Length: 240
Image (cartoon, rainbow, N blue to C red):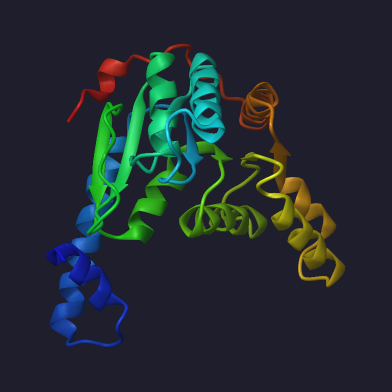
């Protein structure tokens, strides 16, 4: 295991000598500053979440690529976790639309490496720093089928919206069959008064890429009065 994975693991193992804790603060701050600097000028973005294990040619892969392409044609840059599967598909869709394709990759001992369709690629050691970047520079979220990481990102976004930390961000969940059990669980949460019925309005569940893009277009332009320029100049994010 690389040293950066050891640093994050040790961060979660309880109190350590204060000098080591200070070193962690410095490393985290450095990652935050590097992310802020590289993403400051990427323009209006939509973040697309989803599994790294989705294969090219699958329905999930093709849908993610189509949604990203359509969003790109609306003038949005596309930001993902930078890896394979859904992330690769979304970054390919950004390239199809000739808009900026951004990846916030997490360094792992296995499974993930940056895909080949990125104009801006940033590597992170800490999951929570990476999630800050995926949320901070996005005006909307699209959630494709995925596993633990995707669920974490979905509920992180919904919690931030529900608690008012971010406001009126559209969240689109693609794949009604895949997410059917989750929808039933959300209904159970309402029945047990764990969430309000109105909280379900925070999410659009659909299988239609056109509907997803129209929902995001309306939300961003009406709620934020934002008019993304068509076909952002990708040269601003030269491959690095």
